[in-house]
Amino acid sequence: MNKNAELLNFVYQNSGMGIITANQILGAIENRRLRRQIKEQQKGYSRFNKDAKSLLKKNGYMARGVSPLQKLSSGLMIKMKTYKDSSPSHIAEIMILGSNMGIIDANRRLNHYKGADRDVRCLMRRLLEFEENNVQRLKRSFYDCSRGA
Image (tube, rainbow, N blue to C red; front, side, top):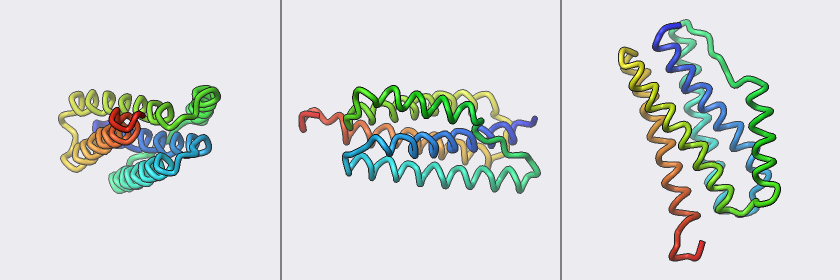
């Protein structure tokens, strides 16, 4: 598979996993502010997913989505992690960890696939910035020491 297809499929899978995770975790959220934040993230992931799929199709590549096993394991992990503690700060922590994994993978792939087309690398950088912004918003909202969180 070529560099463009691999990067685009990463964006497609990463954003697909973001959509799935947000959808799964929304059931555990009672806090309105956090719920709104996660729904906004889900919308952002949906835009990236659509953009990646469109670029894949435009360039004649096959989109490879999140596997059923990944979906299942993600759902089980979220249920396990929120069973005892579904506080806003704990859910924010779960989402931050997921975004941090995405940030690390995106940086690794940007460095590895330097020869990919400009528009593909640009989409990847935008996803990276989106993930970084998600982390910062969650940290500000749910780890503000001045509010006792």
